[in-house]
Amino acid sequence: MKTRQLLLPLFLAASVCGLSAATYQWNSPTTSQWGNTGAWSPGGAAPGADDIIGTPLQSGAMQVNGNRSIYGIDFDSATGWTLRSGTGSNTLTIGAGGLVKSGTSTLIIRDENTASGHTLAITTDSITVNAGTLAFGSNSSSPLTSLNVTGTTTVASGAVVSFYISSTTLSGGLQNNGTIELNSGPADSSNVVTVAGVTGSSTGLIRVSTGTAVKTATLKLDLASGTATYGGNISNGGTNQTVALEKTGQGTQILSGATGFSGGTTVNQGTLLVANASGSGVGTGAVSVRNGGTFGGSGIVALAAGNAVTVESGGTLIGGDGASAISVLTIANDVILESGSTLRLALGAAGAHSSINRTGGTWSFASDQSVFFDNIEGT
Image (cartoon, rainbow, N blue to C red):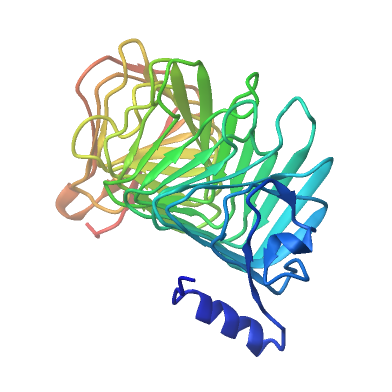
C-alpha cells in the first residue's frame, strides 16, 4: 500500500483531539454501498466521522447511502473511481482533512442520474487537487445535486476540476492555477458557481467544457472583504458555450490577465478592477455597473462591437486603480454614464491624476453625474 505524508498530519490531528482515527480503503470490485462493511479494508466496519478514506484497492463504485460524515478523503491513484449516491436523498460531510485528489486519474462524485431521483449533496472543509481530474457530476444526466466548500479550493497547474452542478458555492475562495470547468448540471439548467474571490497565476483557466452542446454558466465572485487577484483566463470554452461574470460582496476582485468570455459582466457590489496588459480584462460582453458597484482599473476593456460599459444610478466608474495618480483605464467602446452615476479619479502631486482613455466608441452623459477627485498624494 502506498503511504503518503499527508496521512500522518491527518492522523495526528485526529489523535490530538482524543479520537480513534483509522484509514479505510475501498475493496470492492463491483458497485456496493458505504454501509457494506465487507467492502472496506480493514473489514468489519465502515468509516465514520473520525476516519480517513484512502486510495481504493479496487475500482468498484461506492454508493453513499444515508447521511455520512468522514474526517477526510485522500485519493492518489492512476486508476479512476466513482463515488455516487445511493437511493433517495443522501449527504456526505467531509471534515478538517478535506478532499485531496492526486494521481493522473479521474475521481467522479455524482448523483445516480436525473431520471432516478437519487441525489447526493456534498459539504467539505476544503478541496486540494494536485493532479488529474476531480469531477463533481459526470455529465448533464448524472450531475451532482450540490457542493459547498467552506474552506479554500486549490487547483494546481495541469489539474482539472469540473462542476456538473446547478449551484456550487466555494465559500473559502478559489486558488486556481489549473483548469475549472463550469459545466451545466441538468440539461435544462445553467450553472452558477459562487466563489469568495479567485486568485491564481496566468496558467489558470476558467471555462465551460469544450464541445458543441449549448451550455451557459455564471461565475459569481462574492468577495465579502479584502482583495483577490487572478491572472488567468476566463473563457467560453467551445462554440456554443457562454460564461458570464457577476461581482457581489464588498471586497475587491482584480483581473490581471486577458479574458475571452462573452456573456457579459455585472458589478452589483464592491469593486471589480482590470489590470491586464493586452486583450480585454472582462471579455467581450457588455459591462453593467449597478447601484453599489465600482468598476475600473489600470488595464484594458475591449468589448465586441456594439457592447458598452454602462454605469447605472448609484454605480461608480474609476479611472485607474484608485491608488495611483498615473494609472490609466483604457476602454475601446462606448461609455454610458446614466443619471445618478459617479466618475472618480485619483489626484496626485502637482495636479497629476488618473484617467480614462477611451480609444473607440463615444461618451454618453446624462444630466446629473457626480465627478470626484480623490487626493491620494497631496497637492
